[in-house]
Length: 159
Image (cartoon, rainbow, N blue to C red; front, top):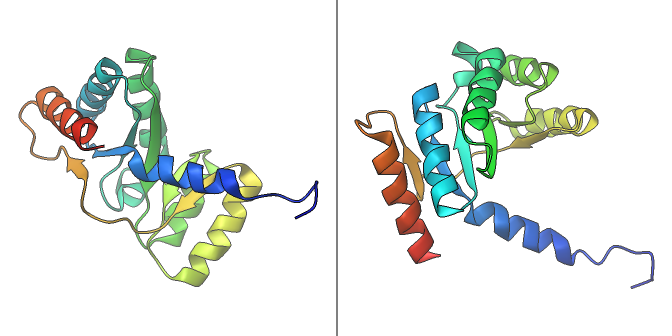
């Protein structure tokens, strides 16, 4: 390997860090604030994810506003936000054009490849499908703060 050739070692570390991030699916501003409060309390990074296909029915404007408001309430939280656009390339393109920095697209691999190229040009990222394990969905949570605290504590102990 030459002096100016990339060694690739940092790529594995970044991938491992991304896989170890705690993932919480949110459906409202109150849930986003609760998840970020719990993450800030524990000092752990968290990924807030929208509900499946929310990019289509709620839109990128809603998502960007929700995340900005939640971050303003908890500026110490280390958060990554992912807008799920499902299998809809139009929703994914709209989100990228609106400036959403990270989206999920679960449609055809060829389409995802094209979206990834567009996202890279815009300084954004596209994720594919993820495993359903090790994720907390706050859809029916009566107390999203307490549930987020328990989930993050459990993940922290198991990490």
